[in-house]
View (tube, rainbow, N blue to C red):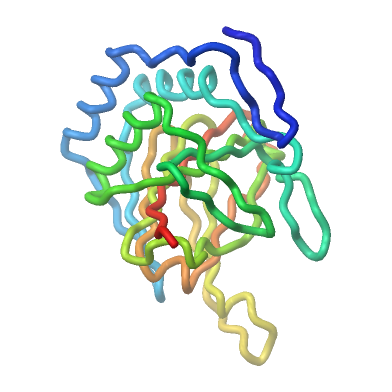
Length: 242
């Protein structure tokens, strides 16, 4: 691999041109998106989610290996978020890619979109075909072990197109994804006894969070000591331009 140079703003630059993914991997991703998929619908009060296995085990392994080699994650300021009045290190690795001029704001941080590499363009095309919609931005989260996690939150930022689902592709270690209704988080007497909804996100799986899920439900990826493996998650989004 070419040597890496760290930039002052916390991003990573790679000296030399990135190696393109193999044509066989690109072709396999295209074929995976073209085959019929078996979807499972998960619904509740304001919850509308679709789930399928987009990539089989072997193709998911190859895709994960390609991403592990090609993707560099944010460091420095871009690897922190502002929560409860303080800056904290994100408990996972993160980076983002998208169309020119796009960015994503959350937890006091504006995340810039790097240009799409070929491997992610192929993945985007496969996810778009499966979801039946187009996306212009992806947030990539890498969980190094079961200790890495994501707290309860909603992806309800004004930059997100509410008409488009958020498509979440999971690779690597299977982890629990937990939805919690907003009314179940309220103090008594306004709290409602609505049970959480848990979905195991498997290697190669695709989850679609449809409207109005993100307005009504919070979601999280809790820490799991029993899940030591690496997990890479890509959430494809359609962002609105100002």
